[in-house]
Length: 173
Image (cartoon, rainbow, N blue to C red; front, top):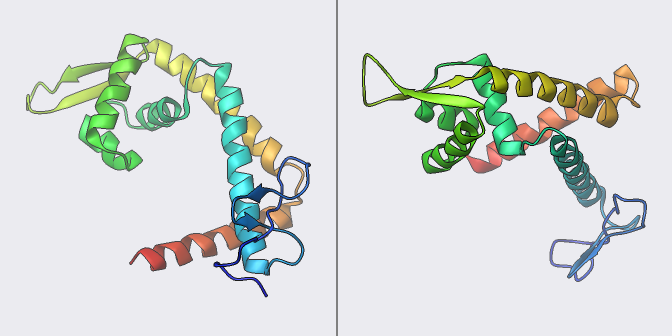
């Protein structure tokens, strides 16, 4: 039986080229189910990220901007701090990203009229147009990733992934 310290923990491929062989880690049919599932989940997330990057290449955006624009389109006028908290990223990172988005004409930042300590962010018409494109990209990604699964399989996958998330959350407590 394999365990975390094993020299090889055979990997589940992901690109149709057979097992992934990373230094000190491979995943194959002899790997315990928990490790196989973990690496399959990792491969799925990696493939999703690659698909997202490819699709966003057509929109002249990147994942951080896309996520920010998505949040702002639904919460126009929030502060930079609120956006950082919503996205779970550092405030300086949000500031840098918003500067780039502002230069691209996607958002505009304005000092709050009632409390000048705050800067509020608003989506421009160009930003709203890009958000509409991103909604299409999102729908295509969902269909690409899960469209081949039956409804029951989609629901079971959701259930299992929620359990994984709960386990991770408990592990962080």
